[in-house]
Length: 126
Image (cartoon, rainbow, N blue to C red):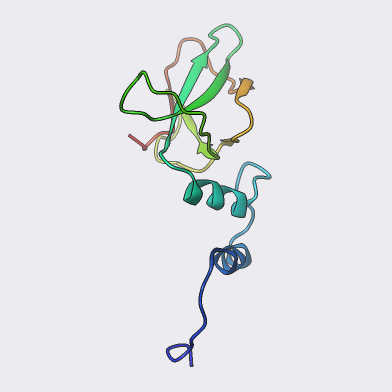
Protein backbone atom coordinates (compact mmCIF):
# COMPACT_ATOMS: atom_id res chain seq x y z
CA UNK A 1 0.00 0.00 0.00
CA UNK A 2 1.09 3.58 -0.61
CA UNK A 3 0.65 4.52 3.06
CA UNK A 4 3.14 1.86 4.14
CA UNK A 5 5.62 2.58 1.37
CA UNK A 6 9.16 3.57 2.37
CA UNK A 7 10.05 5.07 -1.02
CA UNK A 8 11.61 8.50 -1.08
CA UNK A 9 10.40 11.08 -3.58
CA UNK A 10 12.87 13.25 -5.42
CA UNK A 11 12.64 16.07 -7.95
CA UNK A 12 13.26 13.76 -10.92
CA UNK A 13 10.29 11.59 -9.92
CA UNK A 14 8.10 14.66 -9.45
CA UNK A 15 9.02 16.06 -12.87
CA UNK A 16 8.39 12.66 -14.48
CA UNK A 17 4.87 12.58 -12.99
CA UNK A 18 4.16 16.18 -14.01
CA UNK A 19 5.26 15.47 -17.60
CA UNK A 20 2.99 12.41 -17.68
CA UNK A 21 -0.03 14.45 -16.57
CA UNK A 22 0.44 17.75 -18.41
CA UNK A 23 0.94 18.58 -22.06
CA UNK A 24 3.90 20.72 -23.14
CA UNK A 25 3.88 24.27 -21.85
CA UNK A 26 1.63 26.52 -23.90
CA UNK A 27 3.25 29.06 -26.19
CA UNK A 28 6.70 27.56 -26.44
CA UNK A 29 8.97 24.59 -26.57
CA UNK A 30 10.20 25.29 -23.04
CA UNK A 31 10.89 22.10 -21.10
CA UNK A 32 8.82 21.85 -17.90
CA UNK A 33 11.67 20.20 -15.98
CA UNK A 34 14.09 23.01 -16.90
CA UNK A 35 11.56 25.63 -15.78
CA UNK A 36 10.93 23.91 -12.44
CA UNK A 37 14.62 23.30 -11.74
CA UNK A 38 15.40 26.92 -12.59
CA UNK A 39 12.72 28.24 -10.21
CA UNK A 40 13.37 25.80 -7.35
CA UNK A 41 17.16 26.18 -7.41
CA UNK A 42 17.42 29.93 -8.01
CA UNK A 43 17.17 32.59 -5.33
CA UNK A 44 14.88 35.58 -5.68
CA UNK A 45 12.37 36.34 -8.38
CA UNK A 46 12.37 38.29 -11.67
CA UNK A 47 11.22 41.77 -12.55
CA UNK A 48 10.08 42.04 -16.16
CA UNK A 49 10.91 45.20 -18.13
CA UNK A 50 9.03 45.99 -21.33
CA UNK A 51 10.11 48.72 -23.75
CA UNK A 52 7.51 49.54 -26.37
CA UNK A 53 8.10 50.83 -29.90
CA UNK A 54 4.95 52.78 -30.78
CA UNK A 55 5.81 52.93 -34.50
CA UNK A 56 6.35 49.21 -35.10
CA UNK A 57 4.07 47.70 -32.43
CA UNK A 58 7.02 45.60 -31.23
CA UNK A 59 8.51 45.35 -27.74
CA UNK A 60 11.77 44.43 -26.08
CA UNK A 61 11.31 42.31 -22.96
CA UNK A 62 14.13 41.89 -20.46
CA UNK A 63 14.41 40.66 -16.90
CA UNK A 64 16.42 41.45 -13.81
CA UNK A 65 16.40 39.88 -10.39
CA UNK A 66 14.38 41.85 -7.85
CA UNK A 67 16.67 43.39 -5.25
CA UNK A 68 15.75 45.54 -2.26
CA UNK A 69 18.94 47.59 -2.57
CA UNK A 70 19.28 49.22 -5.99
CA UNK A 71 23.09 49.33 -5.78
CA UNK A 72 23.37 45.52 -5.61
CA UNK A 73 23.94 43.57 -8.79
CA UNK A 74 22.84 40.04 -9.59
CA UNK A 75 23.02 38.12 -12.84
CA UNK A 76 20.35 35.56 -11.88
CA UNK A 77 17.79 34.99 -14.65
CA UNK A 78 14.74 32.77 -14.92
CA UNK A 79 12.26 31.10 -17.22
CA UNK A 80 9.36 33.55 -17.13
CA UNK A 81 5.97 33.05 -18.77
CA UNK A 82 4.25 36.23 -19.90
CA UNK A 83 0.99 37.42 -21.37
CA UNK A 84 -0.45 40.80 -22.25
CA UNK A 85 -3.66 42.60 -23.08
CA UNK A 86 -4.36 45.67 -25.16
CA UNK A 87 -7.23 48.01 -24.46
CA UNK A 88 -10.08 45.93 -25.97
CA UNK A 89 -8.68 42.49 -25.06
CA UNK A 90 -9.97 40.01 -22.52
CA UNK A 91 -8.24 40.86 -19.26
CA UNK A 92 -9.31 37.62 -17.56
CA UNK A 93 -7.55 35.30 -20.03
CA UNK A 94 -4.21 34.68 -18.33
CA UNK A 95 -2.93 31.94 -20.63
CA UNK A 96 0.76 32.11 -21.55
CA UNK A 97 1.57 34.16 -24.65
CA UNK A 98 5.32 33.56 -24.64
CA UNK A 99 8.39 32.84 -22.53
CA UNK A 100 11.52 34.67 -21.50
CA UNK A 101 14.40 32.25 -21.10
CA UNK A 102 17.42 32.64 -18.83
CA UNK A 103 19.84 32.96 -21.74
CA UNK A 104 18.42 35.91 -23.70
CA UNK A 105 15.94 38.79 -23.72
CA UNK A 106 13.22 39.07 -26.33
CA UNK A 107 14.19 41.77 -28.83
CA UNK A 108 11.69 43.12 -31.37
CA UNK A 109 8.98 40.75 -30.15
CA UNK A 110 6.05 41.37 -32.48
CA UNK A 111 3.22 42.02 -30.03
CA UNK A 112 1.26 43.79 -32.79
CA UNK A 113 0.47 46.66 -30.45
CA UNK A 114 -1.63 49.55 -31.70
CA UNK A 115 -0.08 52.95 -30.97
CA UNK A 116 -3.21 54.58 -29.52
CA UNK A 117 -4.09 51.77 -27.09
CA UNK A 118 -2.68 50.91 -23.70
CA UNK A 119 -1.12 47.53 -22.98
CA UNK A 120 -0.61 45.59 -19.75
CA UNK A 121 1.93 42.78 -19.50
CA UNK A 122 1.42 39.89 -17.08
CA UNK A 123 -2.18 40.88 -16.55
CA UNK A 124 -3.84 39.85 -13.31
CA UNK A 125 -0.38 39.53 -11.67
CA UNK A 126 0.17 42.61 -9.58
